[in-house]
Amino acid sequence: MDNQIKISPSILSADFSCLGNEIEEIDNAGADYIHVDVMDGHYVPNITIGPEVIKDIRKCTNKVFDVHLMIEPVNPLLENFAKAGSDIITFHPEAEKNPKETLRIIKGLGCKTGISLNPATHLSVLNDLIEELDLILVMTVIPGFGGQSFMDDQLVKIESIRKMIDLTGKKIDLEVDGGINFETAPRAISAGADVLVAGTATFKGGKTKYKENIRKLRGS
Image (cartoon, rainbow, N blue to C red; front, top):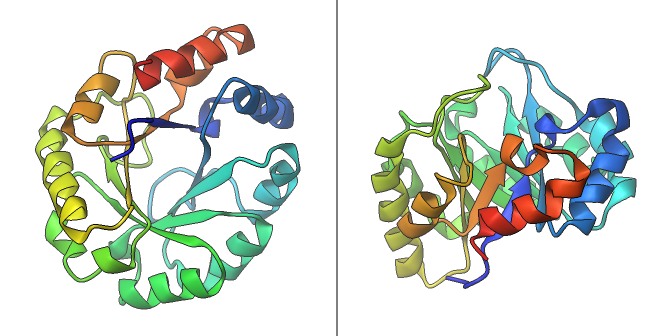
């Protein structure tokens, strides 16, 4: 595992009236990835953004676009998200009948592959997929609902997935998303996470605080 913890600020917590500027600010503040939550009102109750917004904000930064698809079905829209500028495309295995085929499509589009596990999703789903993955995202809240607290019972899952990744000998990001703040970030890192998704904790206090917020989340 890299010593460097990557921070992937979720733009859902940004000010959408000046989204391009917000992305430039978190880029300059040291964000490693830009986390883009895509919700369809179907797989999850909320609706957020689609490929056209990603295409526009792609002009604002060269940082990795870490795109988390909370949509169902996934396959019909993959090409649109890839063409819009996604670098990593993560989806939920329950959203497609054949997740391995979805991973193959993502790779064929030139993007890195990710699988996201809901709190209720057993890590055994990874057994047949882990060799095809560049990123595993562990949700520490129920996806689609804001303002939830970090679920400590997911720390055991993070620890187990870290062991699975290490056994492959591959460089696979282990990302954690949900309730990440200055108190919960060290717990996720101790369990084996090396990428943290943080929305509110990154953007709180305004742009003069972004650099310090990212530094504190990283634990450096």
